[in-house]
Image (cartoon, rainbow, N blue to C red; front, top):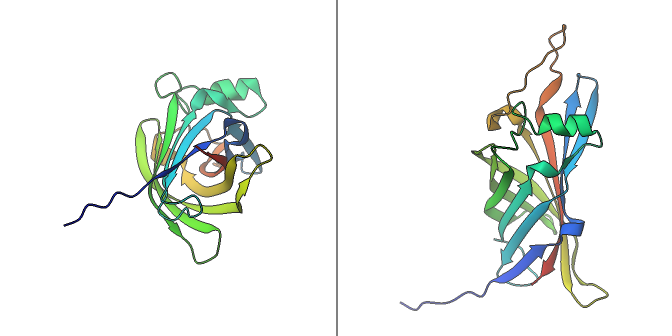
Length: 184
């Protein structure tokens, strides 16, 4: 038996061009959106041009939540939602990252951990414009990953309801991760 070493190409998320966003229905009539501004991540690939079978590993600082309303951000950090004092990080680690049937599209199954609860989540991933060399000579690639989760599956049980029975904050949350990767 011959051991073959496979070289790994390492990419890092550019912190100035990476965020994790969310949208959630509020009072059954509108949406609240926000983002986490401190996102760190790495991606490993077999080559600098193909992301099939990539290994993705991201960490999100819960305290960086930003909905443009300080009081709401502070509430999101409490035990009603993220319990940031006990669980300051969310993590995302790919299980599989496979080409979809359309060029530049991937399906990623990942372990998403929120509040120390880990669930498998499927993301639709789009590579935005291929791999490029920027004006400073660095190799870059951009991606957008989207999914929907039920926040209650991750221990976020906030459950205020209107007199009509409608949830003040819906259980379903749309998640969008935008990242610009830089080849190390």
